Amino acid sequence: MKYLSIILLLITLCFSSCKRSEVIEEQETETANQQLQADDTEDEVSYIADACMTTGSGFRTGEQDQVLSGCATVTKDTLGTNHYKVIVDFGPVNCSSVGVKQRRGKILIDIVGNYKDSASVRTITFDNFYRNDKKIEGTRIITNAGKNSSGQYQWVVIASDMKITRVDGSYHTWNSTRIRTMTKGYTTPTRQDDEYQITGFASGENSDGVSFTANITTPLIRRISCDWITSGIIEFTNSKGQTRLLNYGTGNCDFEAVIEVTGKRGKVFTKTIIID
Image 1 (cartoon, rainbow, N blue to C red):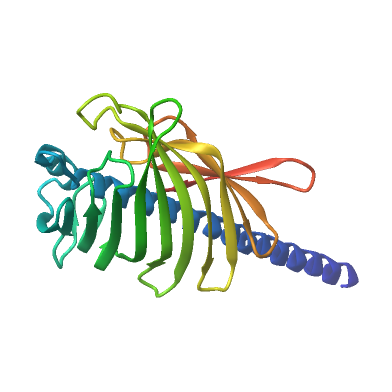
Image 2 (cartoon, rainbow, N blue to C red):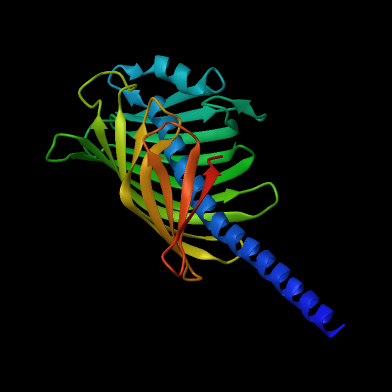
């Protein structure tokens, strides 16, 4: 009877430890997944805004059709010389445009200057906008910083008071500063060969009170011909002192990323998560 009690105690402790590990893993994954959603959301909004921008000859309507797939209506008001207000309206009911993502509500874009003109500015806000049933809020200011020494266009992207709220009411907020450099396609008129390199940092907090910082240690790569970020690494640390890597891969166009966790003995554990 004595040995049976010891065995039962060991089984109970093992079960408890296993459950605790599952909870810790889930928490670690959640922080990374929130950062993944933030990056994908910000990049996608820039993608939509780029396709709806004004140029010297007006809108690029063919690229609007490609990005919006007839799902949204785009209207433009002239506010002054080279100053426009653009409304991208997906309507009150979910509709599918880029890839398999569902959207509803409006993206509002204030445009001053032409896209490739130095010091041109686009300010992006949201009006009851949802992406895959997650509400998106905040402000993004995108400023053309001119060309770098290689003749590549660069933009400074400052995101303030960004927030994603899920169906269950949980949320996370963040602020970020990014540099987007057009590394390919800047000498051609079409956008389909455009490729961007993204660097920078972010910080935020979720509804559980866990805060985090995130730094891009290997530049993120976004090809306009792909719906997702295709490569790059972000290192993030949360307020619990846990540091993790979010790896977007080596260039394949897919909707997956990998969390990399280094254990106490140097062993690297990985888990694949889906970009949604």
